Image (cartoon, rainbow, N blue to C red; front, side):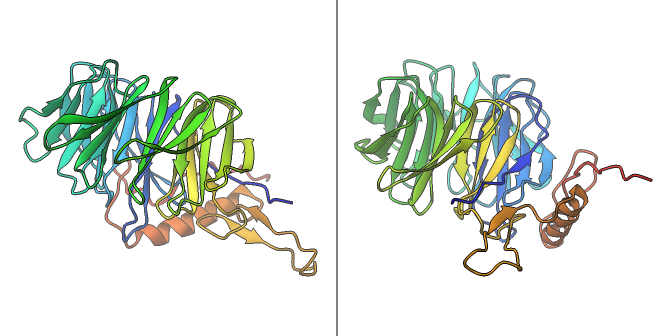
Length: 368
């Protein structure tokens, strides 16, 4: 019998979580940023979900968020007609980029020198972050609001999606190379550099295309409308979530459903694998992020595999739990894990002006 998933739930947002992204693996671990309709994107430690800080400055819902590879910069896209670039170490706002309509998507080049944005005004913009006052390069051609825009092919090309069309652009000539029309509204798009794979979801379909030609590689049909999907870095499996509150895990090669379970208390808007593939994160209408193990039962982050010693090897049933049975034990573990991490990392922040070394789990009142 398969072991049961025990997710880590990350609270703090007050409205639906609509986008999330991981950084690359840095000498200090990896990090996770979330975009929310509450207008307050949050930065967390990627493997534990520990809150690090909240980026304050937007005056409307935040629809998109991303981190650069080494997690030194963050970018956010919002309904206040701006995209912002942040110092992800100090939490300071660095640049505000004014737009003429709602901004939905932001993406850094690999060297973090340029930022790509897309939104409701149907235009792609490329900003040189060393010259933020300069006018951006603009690419037109979409016929409806842009939902996602991503660099691809070592930043030589751009992938963008509007309502029912995915387009591939050449960065140098600023011209369209190829277009892909789909039957229903595109709900998400993910670019996987290893293998040049583009993951697109629309309706109940999870489709995989070549990022270089937009030719379809394969597609799967899910039981419910899917809002987001993510491919494992090793391309072993994929996860997807959508309108039925469930998370689905499929074998990428065969299409076999490996797992399905209720993931949240509302529709799931976004899912992403961590850069090491050990976990995946989901964000939902219920205002929470949850972290899930790719291999249930493996000791990783705050998860420990517990095997009862009194049972023999054949009968022992491994179960994955958060260590300890009391909240105090969970709190101690989070503190121990985070303190050791932050003792060797660059200074990060919280908005009380105090270095955030651990997630503040609520303490349980003890009976006198």
